Amino acid sequence: MNDISSQTMTFMPAVAAVHAETWPVDEIVALFELPFNDLLFRAQEVHRREFPDADVELATLLSIKTGGCEEDCGYCPQAARYDTGLEAKKILEIAEVMTAARSAKDSGATRFCMGAAWRSPKDRDMDKVEEMVREVKALGLETCATLGMLKEEQATRLKDAGLDYYNHNLDTAPEFYTNVISTRDYQDRLDTLGHVRNAGLKVCCGGIVGMGESRLQRAGLIAQLANLNPYPESVPVNHLVQVEGTPLYGTDVLDPLEFVRTIAVARITMPKARVRLSAGRRQLGEPVQAMCFLAGANSIFYGDKLLTTDNPEAHDDRILLDKLGLKTRGKVESGGCS
Ligand code: SAM
Ligand code: DTB
Ligand code: SF4
Image (spheres, rainbow, N blue to C red):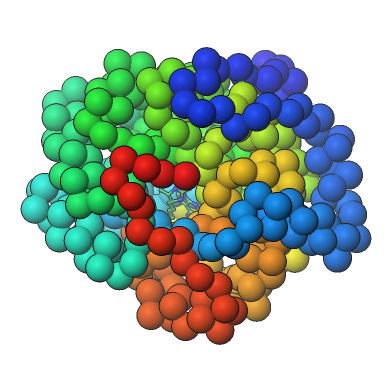
């Protein structure tokens, strides 16, 4: 690995830029090391200033192409090389996607994210995905896709089809990355993010914590994200879901308070981003999720399934949000998104 850790990537801001502030890793470590209550207080101040409504966005995921992936991501149940008992399937038909999208909309989601277990989409897949994007967008939902690495021309095609966001995660700090993935490198991910930005798409980019990385490496991931110029509009923070058969199964489980700290640091360093509680909410339970909302999380994946693993039941999420008195983000006006 080269010295990517010290680089700040600058992309042409093709959409309303979220302002750039450089965050040295040691300042991010200093945030992590604040007394817990001081950290949460600072995160709350930023959150209330930037999101006076303090609403929570509901985003629903659908796996449009499940399993059989050629990559070796050490956390992933969809990698063909790990025996996780998952059955690989063909890409879904448009009608199946639309049924799921309508149901997501009826349940109150405003964003619909389509995920595929690909290293990168083949050109023959693009027509079908574009059709999905067009039709989901026509329902009045914000659209997001995560299909692996993209070439610039593929990003432009997705933008032209009406895609709002592209999700592509950095996953972890550059220094820890090779412990987890060997079939694509960090720079490949940064390149895809550059293509996505240059095509005028909004960026959804985050990572996974609880993979055995150190606090310094968690700070390194946040530094990479916060120093993207502009930083992502959407930041999914996943807590590793340990799936039997994957290399990371059996990793020591991260202290839940450290997960809350990670959310708070993401909120402080990327004030205007939607910080999303992503994979792993079932394992976190209600009290830890409540602390995450206090720390500045303002988006969740909503629906009984993530891509292949279980998410909290939508019904239970509504009860939790109600108990906490949290309102959800309203209907998206056509063409508009924040
Ligand atoms: N195949 C595409 C790619 O990797 O770019 C898109 C789908 S991939 C499943 C999207 C993201 O899901 C990964 O980058 C990773 O951050 C997250 N993810 C996958 N498996 C996970 C797990 N077991 N626990 C937490 N997050 C996970
Ligand atoms: C993201 O950061 N997390 C989501 C979404 N982007 C695509 C995926 C989580 C996957 C968890 C494991 C699974 O369900 O397969
Ligand atoms: Fe494939 Fe994506 Fe899973 Fe990696 S995370 S194995 S690229 S589906």
